[in-house]
Image (spheres, rainbow, N blue to C red):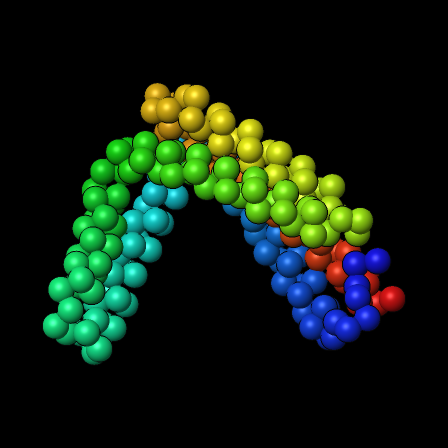
Length: 183
């Protein structure tokens, strides 16, 4: 059974609900990215650019308050800001760069998913986590083999597939947790 005796039933119920909601949102986002991969790629790079700029603002505030004389801290703020702006100005180039980063991400995600599967084994759901790891490994290989020519479409499709699979895993694990919380 998914539930261990020392886990608080109320926390498990809360986890299960949030896991299912997050899973559904990831399935929807993944489906949209698969349907329109170019828009999914551009949306992701624009989101990433906005996150870099937001991070630079937060880091700039922290640096201003705590490390005003630290050249290294201000350099980090500058790099975050410039990277974010470049991603927003040239999303096509950002997509090609992101494709390589995603390949690395998918290889690391495969490693993490295989580790999670081993941690879950022999509990229900471990095979789905292992399948997620295998899918992530294949996605990383696809990204490397077709780069840079297919990056505008593969980024959207592969992110969509990854979100879809991660969403299904979260829904399933949340369902198992919810079932365990009621046992």
